[in-house]
Length: 150
Image (cartoon, rainbow, N blue to C red; front, side, top):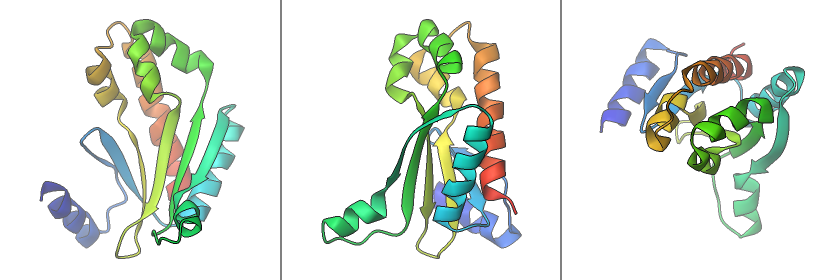
């Protein structure tokens, strides 16, 4: 209910800012799913990030004779950033490399979601990694903005 109320509120004010719920940061996109994912890939590559995979879940569903609104997952990372996090707590490797979920809701609005680094820190008991976590949080926020804004 809390998420639905927040979504309705953000829709009414036309917000494009991020919110975090259940460990996810979600940002409204002004582009369709494919364009948002394309823009994300472009900025990731420009910043020297490795794009490991791009998964089109709707296409997969169609292959199984099922329907799904446009939904794509982009998996990306950089060992120079991920390795220090894994050195703080190896269990964080289950959440690495980073992922961005780009999806269209039932009303046709496109959203960009990613794991909140603060949530990952709590989940994995990361200590002594504050500087790396801040760097990751800033980078993810910047990637989301670049992919979702006009």
